[in-house]
Length: 302
Image 1 (cartoon, rainbow, N blue to C red):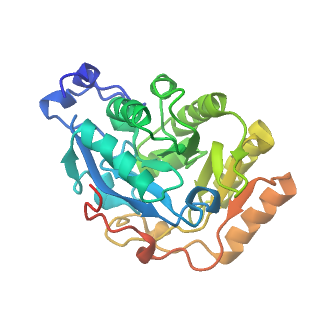
Image 2: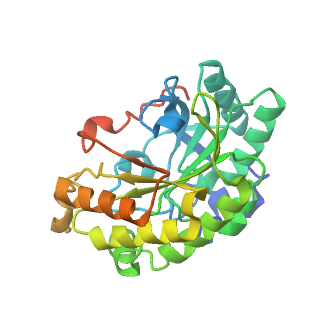
């Protein structure tokens, strides 16, 4: 672990809390400098071009630099689930997922482990890893940190959570989410370019931006969709999600979040995106706001 000396004053994410994660101190991300993974397996509930029929080789890392009060993956975001592993073991996991038939390697909440991931990916590629690499993130990233991964990531899958700084501050104690997320997205698009798909329709390169609609925040969602389309047009895909799930224990003190997104509000947002001209996109249909869609973080495959 001493090889990652930058973690002694960690400033990997925009929080820049500067703690010495090498000495066991935990940053805003709720984890120290050791690599912790809560699950590694085939995942079938991403966008169709990411999961395909074979499944996405998803690695769920513990910890998160956002801390949104409504997080569906709170068990791992809090750093309370997962298993300590070495960088060598992470390399092996990547190769094992490829052997299982994964169409890609999907790195979920990876920001605070960028140094370890970079080494593991390089080693795995040297040993035959050839499927696309997906960087699945909250979107709250530093451009300088993303540049460390240039040439190693094929697909960026960021969230774009908040347009208003007031909303970001209320639910994630972050004042500059839009500023940092927009700069990060610019770097992501610069690195991987326009979307590229295989003949089977599986994404090989590109950016898919996810936006999770929150109950009562239709205008904030419209502002995000408008910004994304006016800035990038069809150079990115936009995934508009209605799967917000109110988890009672987490949203105490936020009564406005104690409900699902209404079908009417979601339809209004989809219609708005269509009127803007959005063509490269994904929407969710049916019952997606269910706790049963939240993975079981039981150290599978770790």
